[in-house]
Length: 310
Image 1 (cartoon, rainbow, N blue to C red):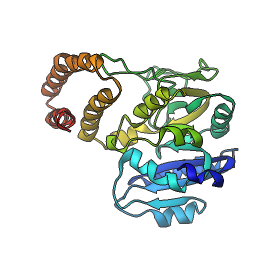
Image 2 (cartoon, one colour; image 1 turned 180 degrees about the vertical axis):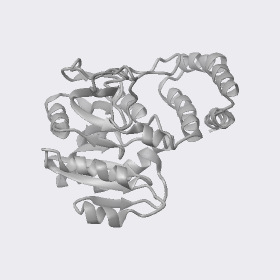
Image 3 (tube, rainbow, N blue to C red; image 1 turned 45 degrees about the vertical axis):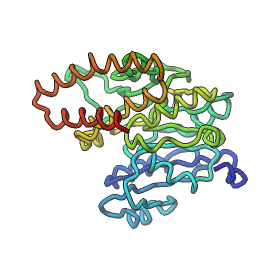
Image 4 (tube, rainbow, N blue to C red; image 1 turned 180 degrees about the horizontal axis):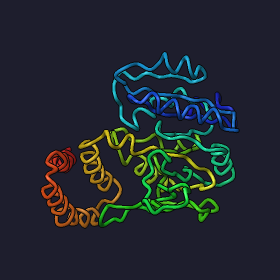
């Protein structure tokens, strides 16, 4: 990809999003991009083999968008990677199609990457979209509800991490950018020259863990991972997660083990395997049996078996 460097225009941001059977969600994202004050952008929409080709809709409503149609569903990483040969920006902004940008989001992310040495990737603060955010009946103030404002690196024993700030109301308690373990796949910006060093996301994950794996590779290459809370994105995650069903269970299980095998080898993987055998597997099987979630139980076991025999 480095051979395309001479076509880049300094400051240009290539915004990449992947659509799969959610044309109206994608249109809402595109409209929010139009409202940004940072105008030096190009927008690329990859359609991941949706049942109905949305090309005509995007052409009529958003003629400025570069539309790329995949013949098959390539997953999260594969869909995003398909746009890379067509992207001319010196910054690459990967945004989920179920997100919407708030005022100043792009400008603040660009400014941070442009002014921070060895910054490899930056995510904005991500808040649950008001249309999907859970609110207890006792909630009085309708402040944004945070989903993500950073994520520590995974525990090498349990293979787990957690999203910082999840469930908190945004009251300005995160006033400036700071380093973190992992970016969030719903919205993350990377300089193109960093991509040329670390390469694109691995496509064999298909769904989940792609950005976590990517950030581990960034750390290993000597780059830092950041979150910029002064940039904010709304995320309608519940609208998409509800449709995944047992696929989420399968990929979360499979990819967690695959990720740990790749990045926490040797004695650390032995400890993780012991935790998996004696804690993770029994506790999950008990939960699925107790709730009668037989589909999830099968997906869970399939995820373990498939990654072991690969």
